[in-house]
Image (cartoon, rainbow, N blue to C red; front, top):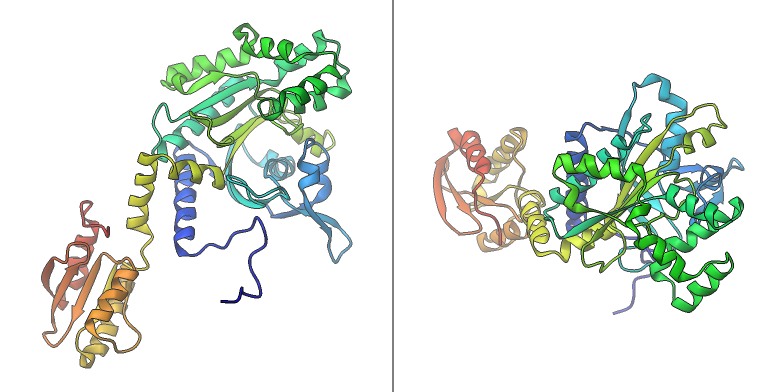
Length: 431
């Protein structure tokens, strides 16, 4: 068979119904956790002024932009992350909101990088931020939310770890070793890739700063270099009963230049893939993007859909939880109406309309078909029930598709009957 003329671009995805359902599972879990923790949802544009990302993002991000000149002659870019857009938005409207501002967004982002496991050129991010609070309590609150998110996906203690660091500790290290201020961003970029850099290349790169890998690793291994902010965060999380999920790891510095203090990343305990989530404090970004007009301390983190999905699918109990959700929520309909006698099609059409108006997802075959073929269609739709409409009408039969068990009912009580059956938490699920 010949290849189709057009396919999706490298690193971009089509979402067929199951893929859409999995994406919805991620979105609904993210949204539910954020809302129960007191965060309000916002949204920013996918397209922004390119200068927004060049002003203080740094690292590799500027080389990964999808940017172009629009028809109005503006230099624009598809957003590679959401934090810069949030900082721009808050700088414009922060006077309208009491502090701290606790907001979240689920948005699509784009980066021109090599597609690989856990990474594509388009992806969705769950972004959670607290603005207007400079103390470590805000950082602890965010880390707690990251932990609650992992637990909500079905992970348990031991499946993941939050590795916490503080860029201020590295600034002190740089000062003690005489590093010039303008060289610190590049130095931190080396530290950010420490675990992924071949030993000889790492040695060469550090030698340019008069440092050795041993000196750097000795600094990382010494718990006495933990900042006071980290100690306060750990005490906060201990009081919440969450400290076992957190460990000090000074090798975490994050790649974006706008981070100013505490940073953290979420990893699977086996470290079998890249970070599941990451973020930290960016106290100067709002001021930078507003040219000093608005100063607002801030901290936040983001979780992408690629890596968290991979980890869910590779963790048995989390994968089982997702499959149960899909069974209950990914069906095309709840009830498939089987027209057992074509003379009753007008009746079946009326019943489908009544079911839909009552909030029950219902479908039926659009053209005449054998009953066996209709049951196959019901199974493909992943409906829980098949409602048989035949010559016995107004008597009806309801078949539980998972078990093939059958119940008798009547058209006069159809809506309360099916509403009750659908609300039963132990109702049969399609295998």
